[in-house]
Length: 255
Image 1 (tube, rainbow, N blue to C red):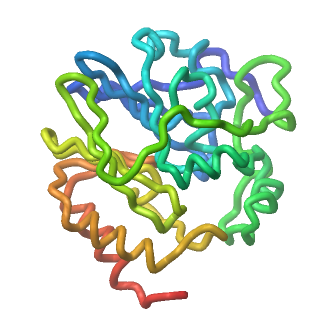
Image 2: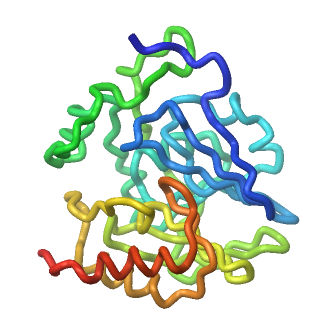
């Protein structure tokens, strides 16, 4: 029996330097993504928006005090579900088109795989991809991600200025056509979404292009990076980034 969360649905992890990692601990690891809250002198941004199972504004009202811009690294449910709560949303133009069409979504494993159009993974996954409900009376069957028209379309090389900190948009297709990373050159921090994280990288979705993914990995290996803040899991340093990129590039090329 799935229980009900009695506290906050989200957990906040202060990393210092005006960076907060936000997680959803009651979401299965398949969809448990990071949200990154970056504070600037003039404005804040939030990188990705989670599943949208629980309201960000209701659960973390302080997140919205400075009218943050949410930047979506790509158009998958676990990264965009809460984006509609923000006044302004930004995404690469290819992701923006996908968001406008509507993102396949379900909290049920079999239904989600069917909607995405992929064969279920060999690893065992629970039928329901959350282990608790965000509140009494919540019905997981009603979960969906509404089509979204972003307010700002991003392109490779665009600069996001928060006052005292700037981030450069890097287009890194492969996992999806609209994948981006955000690079803060002053600190060497790189926010990668699902382009790279410390785990099995997914390049076999109907929208994935492996040749493009290889080019993106080559690009990542050349960046001046001190720390990677990924879309899933813990942050890691440049040496681990190089291990992950090289491991991918050393695989036998596949169509």
